[in-house]
Amino acid sequence: VQLQASGGGLVQAGGSLRLSCRTSGINFRIAAMNWYRQAPEKQRDLVASVTSGGSADFVDSVKGRFTVSRDYARNTMYLQMNNLKPDDTAVYYCNTFWRGREWWGQGTLVTVSS
Image 1 (cartoon, rainbow, N blue to C red):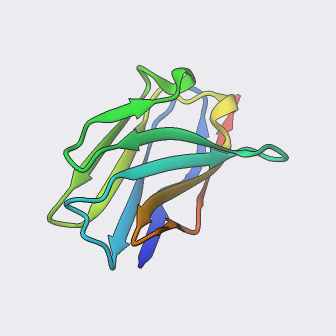
Image 2 (cartoon, rainbow, N blue to C red; image 1 turned 90 degrees about the vertical axis):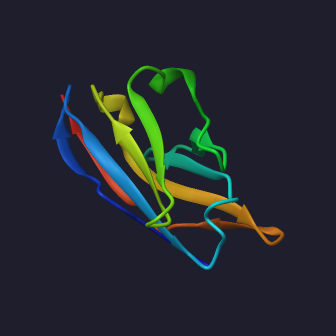
């Protein structure tokens, strides 16, 4: 199983980024997926969850600004982040639970400047 997160970078407040999480080794069509983030010196927190069918839930702080989508042909999940704020600065990780354990991508850094 591999989860490859990408798409992070430096953006000004109010800008947008789209993160990608390419998966292999899982049946992407039936796997629920998650996005987490970890800000400097803070714990890793759940940002968004998406079911196998594409229904998504978000932490309150990103509701209305972030969306999640899935491309089943590419086995890839996306996190579209709009109206970014400095508080969104973190390393973002994709995650899934498959065959009895959690799997994590390597993380991609998002830095939002004020």
